[in-house]
Image (tube, rainbow, N blue to C red; front, side):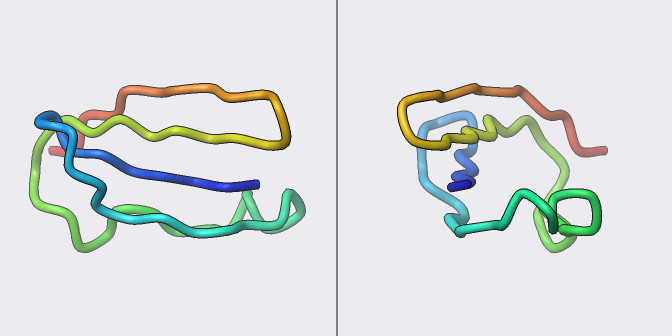
Length: 55
């Protein structure tokens, strides 16, 4: 799976490939400042976007 994290003005903050079996233990955003982020998860033709608020 491909993960991309964007801040609210559309800048790409992080991009990485993650195996599906590693998703439960993957850490994401531990060094990001507080704010709202869009996380785009894609696998082949399936793309999902999740909005995340970090406090």
